[in-house]
Image: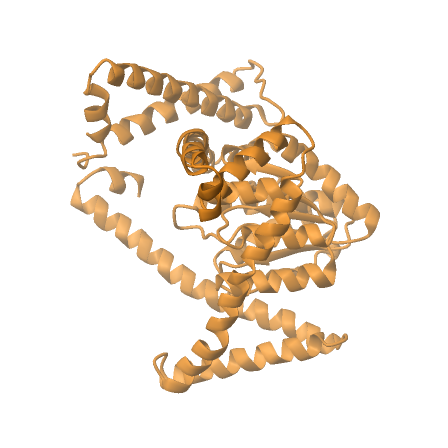
Length: 192
Length: 259
């Protein structure tokens, strides 16, 4: 696959595509196995019958079986199927995502407490960036947007690119260890 | 023939691989490898020990990435670290090691990793298959399920290692709320600040990839970390030369990179 990425030789590209197609098949089977795991975990919780766990697990299994049956019988574009997906699942996802804002506030509260010189720099930088991004900041002082942008475009970007290069090289090193069979701990062994 | 725009990348990859192979050979030939301490990795034992003392479980999430896309190296790095954590959990008789999975194809790997670790520690009777849980392959459904597990099980140690996206901060914040000692790590640059803010220890980018090699204490694997550092030095030197050349009006490096 690595050679298929770099070289324009057609058989290499075809071989690479074939391997990727195998990956899709494996993923499909893996989803089946994962569903079995899900059902097993929740059946166990129902059999234990602790507090309201059995009710939640029961609801999950009924929803899983109902949606799977409907999808297989009528297809994923069926009106009832899309109704349940759009009316129940999509708002649920959006609600969880919307909670990010509150978590940012609580994380920022902890991160911005001045404990040492680094956290003091973080607080001052964050104040500049935040005030630079709201109209009240510009109204207070015209320098906030300018310095806030500079902080994001120069020190922040330089740091990010440094991390990106490090992560890229780290990824190659990790890949090489796996390809050479030096690192096998992801298969469960002690790795030695 | 090498594709257009990929010539420089190809030769850069060759140079990096040669650096790694040289470093590994150097380490194998008996020359000692000294690498800096990574506090996030050193704290893993402390976190598992804490869970043992408190009689509470350990939660491990190997990211929400798969094993076939660009984030695959992060998932493999996380699975390697999971093996190390599972060994410690088995050795210390931790109440439970709960692994939550989002990507279906990661599930069998995680199951095998944990089972093998318990087997090697002679504690296969303590291995509970239903503690390796596939939750959902939908991002926020998965996140919501993890919130629930955290709230109910109250883990004493929370490991968030691998590829994460918008759910990263939420998972770390919920872990913080339940009082877990948190070790997080990712190479997703947009999520690193969230992990830094919300967790006790953070593995940034390459530290995640170096994790298994660092913890194995195997000289050859440590040699590959040295190779990483040599490669970074080469890249830094290239950048410096490129900056100077650009300032002097040369476009040589710009055209070299685009080849």
